[in-house]
Length: 348
Image (cartoon, rainbow, N blue to C red):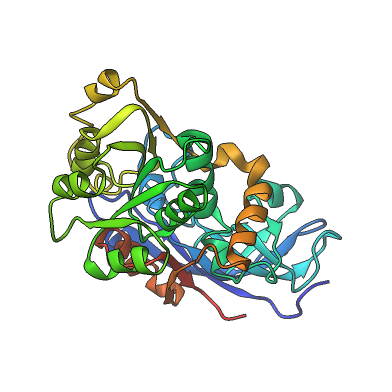
């Protein structure tokens, strides 16, 4: 089935590699007619996009876990949308799908690129559009597998202390809530009283350290008197160094991101206190969520249950309009978002 009139697609493309903050001048705003996908293909109308710190790394040239976005290419982004044209029996018009939609209003996929983009159907009875970009989406999968597979909380030893940075953000809120469900003691680190109050009072963290208005070192002494067993790091830099001074023997440190370092114009600052890993026989390991793609459905099923029974909450911060993408991305690095940052491109 095919939509009748040709569709115009507005896109945001990478014009040049940023130095420091990705200001508006690194983007080109373009439009073109949506291509017919051909036999086996589909066209998806973007409803909302996931705005993630990892985007900043994708803009840099050099070796990484995923190729950089090429100059002139539509900016990479995960999103959720609705099928508006289908030449594929597996997808019907009005099916809601999630996957690599990129920063544009429409995505045209041939039969092969559907799989490459990870396009899968989702059920809005299980979670809302924004929840599918948060707890049930890539951030939630990152938090789930980062904590459970890399952090490996000891479920037979109730009360292990888990510390998570970016506690009110997309990944952090999932990690903290999941750790509480699994029987851990959870201490968040976030910027500002409002965020700290939310993770303690609304989602049940045991404590939260406000790095903007106090000493992280003193906060860790107060709230982690018996040390840190699992540290889920989203920020890197000085906070990582500080937490390394408080880790316990056989601690596990999950390196998910280093948002404090992404816009550096000089070399990334590595951990100065890394010898604490030796002293404490601790382990530091990175998490790349794509490694767990064949198990996403298991994590989605588990956490959808937690959302349904009220054990887990999902907070999103929604910015409206594709033209607001450059400013929305900067919100991440300025600490202005509260919850998972989502760009609404179109209404249902």
